[in-house]
Length: 196
Image (cartoon, rainbow, N blue to C red; front, side, top):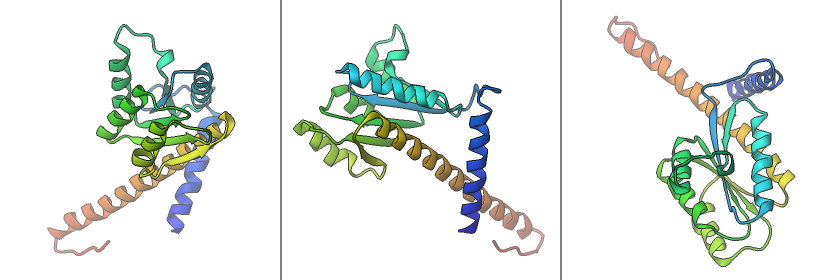
């Protein structure tokens, strides 16, 4: 437990440094790819997606994709399916109605075992969206509700940082285990015994 706390503190300090240095150094490779999925029916939703992208673009660890910012001759369905496949994290924003594109993006993300963070607006929803939330979203441990864009951005920031720490800690622990296992294997041939 103490190791996890120390790791979290070190990672937080590292992230703080990364954010402070974002204007000094540009990270161009190995960014965490984030795909934002939501209804495209309303200008409010476009503003919301753009606000989230703008926020995430200020953090140099993320490469954020929204469909509106990627002009391409590729058919829109093929384009977003490809982007979901290439992404590490899917941010799914559910508001008033269920759009076929959102369902398709969700299914592609599930098929490719992507980490999905679902954000459900507190307002009125159509019955098909309510069913989708109950059947597909609620089983996810990464779903929450929001009231407005600022609260949504705050929750996304919290969830992505928590995910980053969790992924880092799991990787660190896996690495520790593999190092101990390697020591065990390498000393087995010499007759020395090392226990992890």
